[in-house]
Image (tube, rainbow, N blue to C red; front, side):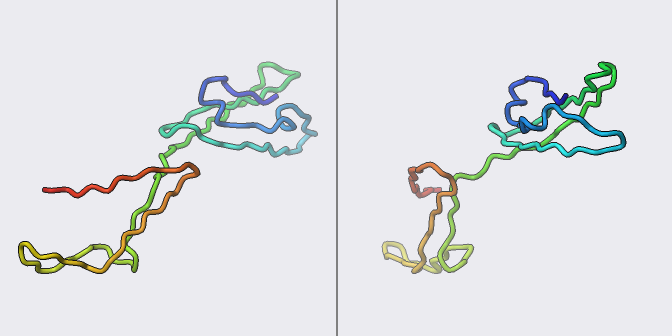
Length: 121
């Protein structure tokens, strides 16, 4: 029998229904299908227990650890691959154009609203 702790973190780790109970022949092996889908960013720690149903004292504990990082929501880049938008020397009161375009890419499944602000510092 394979079981999890039942904590809130254990819902992010899925064991296929066909793999929760089973039989292993003498000197045999069995692979279990585990799927990890984190719902929150941060450290993840969960234990899985494998029990021998015929002998309750025979138990193996497996620790599953992960460092889940939050995925970025958008990416900004200058078209053409430049790293810096350089206007060069500009006289006060004149308009300068660097001739570059900024491309924003939404990297999520949800719609995002963006605001572009100029830092006056």
